[in-house]
Structures are given as structure tokens and as C-alpha cells.
Image (cartoon, rainbow over all chains, first blue to last red; front, side):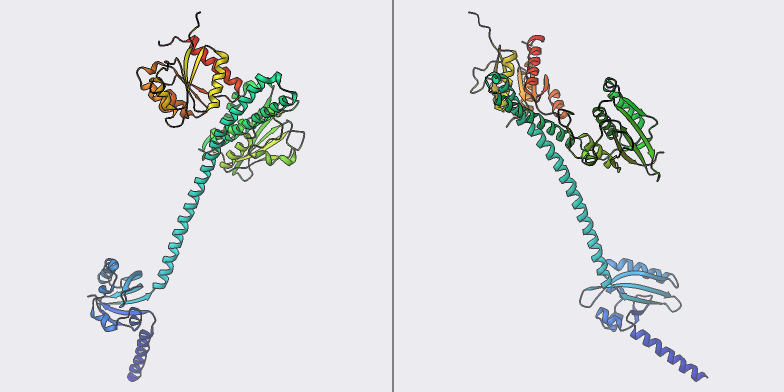
Length: 381
Length: 144
């Protein structure tokens, strides 16, 4: 029986030592004095040193100088605390050729035998992949930032360009129209009918161009910066606009219906422009009847945004133009019928979209007129 | 024969057409004015100091100054005039197409006596020039 036990132990021990010798991971036993006592052949394969060379020198000598401190700290923990476990510890070991290999460690100390049992895995390849990925992420991030900055800059340049172009174009235009005006004044009686007509066309075109330039100037100056949102009563904003337009409201005998408009999270100055432009339009395009305007706001069913409707009973906007009226410089009527530059609704759209909302024109269910809809995100408090 | 002496005023304006418009407008409202035109800031300073080429230049009763000039621009000219103890009593009216609040503020901070924005049509411009001369030649008592 005893023989069988010895045989069995010997057999077991053979299997274990085979396991030790054949393991592709690096297995080792070190003493608390800092020397390797036993290493499996994988060490030779990975680091290029013979096992005797590895045993002859304190192991810390093989560790990358930058990793020595943390390695010593970890070794100290193993030495201080019986059965201390090291997990996920990583450092670099020098290969015989001078390069370094990344090692990922698990180890445990055994104070009774004054030994440290450790397993190391060569993770140099995984580590290089991770570094590469990190590098790519970093460069990607930098490129996104660079692109965004570039885009913002070119946007600013464009706005700046529009402003300068519109401003500088006004100068020669003034000269043209002033001298044609003088020409017409001084020589009117001496000029044939046709020439008088030409002068009339030049002056009209100059006037039209002046309106376009004014609109471009106003639009590019009105840059709609990031909205400075505060909680503000939309009723108060509308009341202030109505106050400004009082004279016009009274002379046109306008009827405005709006009550209890909600508190919204928005930039007061920018929202004021929206109401001002919509009201001015409604007062302008009222048709035969005195202007009649109804403003309402309801909380969206999802509770995420306020939905404003701005209804008038004016001349209305034909179906096919309901999208394009928001375009810059878009006008539906001749300058003679309804003067204007085609900029008000473009500003409304810019402001609403800067607030994360939408603006559109609905189809009237009954009667004539126009219904503007817009949304302002953010539930009321 | 007693010919009334014409009143000298100085226009600093580099654009010939604009200068002509000022001239026409002034002739219409106040033919007794004698308009002298210089095209840049250096000449304006030289004119006021009767420097080379302007030995016989009169002391103007009013300076109409364009802001955007080649070389020494109108802002600098304004500063030079208002820093000069002798010249600073001459009223300087800035005539500009710039709507920029910065320009307006700059001019008043540098002691401009007025800031006029050029209107876009001639009849409004003529009206503006008439009002300006009514004020400076009828309403106010000049420094000298």
C-alpha cells in the first residue's frame, strides 16, 4: 500500500512537473530575498536568457527602470502579508536583446516556506494593440475637434464676409442712385420719354438692391449667438412687443387674442424677435379686414415641449410657398404691394432652431389666414 | 462793390463722387460756403497747418470728415485735430456710412462735434446737409 502511495505520489509529481515544464505561461517560484529559485522553460523562450542567468541576478534587475518602484512595492506587499494575492499587476521585463516585454502577473506568497509563487503572461502584443487603439482614439478625437473648430471658423468667416460685402456694396450703390437722381432732377425736362423711363428703372433697381443689402446686413449682424436661456414668461414677452406696436395696433384696429402664455426656458431677447416678426407680418398681411391674431400655447403630449400656434385671418400663404417663406430674402409679393426684405421669418427660423425647436406653417382648417406653429423644448417648472 | 466773403469749410473725403455730392448739396442750401476738399488724412493735417502745398489755406469754420481714408484714416485725423490746442475749437462733423456703434462711440469719445450717417438717397442727403449748415452757421455762436 505504502509502495502504491509512493508510486501514486511520484506519478502525480511527474504530471505536475510536466505541467510546470510545458506551460506556455511563465511560472516561477521566488524567495523573499528577491531571487528566482525555479522557473519553467517559457521564461527562456520569452526573455531570451537561460534559466541560470535569470536565477543568478535579483529579479528586480530585469524590470524596466520605470517599473521598478511599483514592482518593489508589490513585492513588499507579498513579503509583508502571508498569502497576499497579486492580481492584474503589469510591468516590463528586459529581453536579452535589450527590448522589453509586457508581463501580466498573478502571484501569491507563502510565508511558511518563504516563497512567492507566480505566474506571468507575456501580453506585449495585446498591450501594443491597446496602445494603438488608444492612439487612434486620441487622434480621432483631435481630428474631430480640429474639424469642428475649422467649421465654426469658416461659418464665422462667411457671416463676416456677408456683412462686409453687403456694407461695402452700399457705397457704390449710393453713388449710383444719387447721381441718377441728380441726373433726373437736372435734365428731366430735356430728356425724351424713353430716357426718363430708363432712369426710372435704374432708380427702382437701386432701391430694390438697397433693400436686399439692408436685409443681408441685418441678417448677418443678427448672428443669433447661443441662446442665453432663462425661465421667462412668454406672456410678458408678447405684452412687451404689443406695447411697442401699440400705435400700429390702434391705427389698424387690430384684435389680438392671447392669454396665460406659459413660462418657457428661452432667450428673452431672441424670443422677442420671433413674436415681433410674426406680429409685424400679421399686421402687414391682414387683407381687407382689420388684423385679427390669436396666440396659444399647449404642452406637447410627451410633456417635453411647448407648442405655440400663432394664427391670423389675413391673406394667407399659398400651399406651395409654405416652406420657402422661411428662406432668406424670400418674398411673395411685389415691393409695391407689400414692402419688405424677406428676412423676418428667416430670423424666426434661426432663433427657434437655435433653441432646439421647429417652426412650420399649418394648413388652416377653417377660413383664411395663416397659422404658424413653433415648439420650444423644456417643460415648465 | 461789397462781395460778402465766402465761408471756408474743409471736407476730408477720398471718394471723388461722394465729395461732389457734398459739394452739390452745400451749393444748394448755402452757396456762400467755400468748400475745400482734401483726399487723405495727411493732406487734411497739412491744410490745417498751412503746410507745403497749402500755404494759403484759410482756417475752416467747419470740418466734415470721412472716417475711412487711405493712409492716415479719419479716426487719426480727428485725434490729431482735437489734441491740437489751436485746432480743437474748429467743429468736426464725422460723415460716415458706418452704422457701427463702435465707430460712433469712438468719434464722440474723441470729441467729434457730431456724427452723421450718410443716407442712401440724394434728397435725404441734401436735407441732412442743410440741417447741418443751419446749425453750425445760424444757430451756434462759433469759438472765433
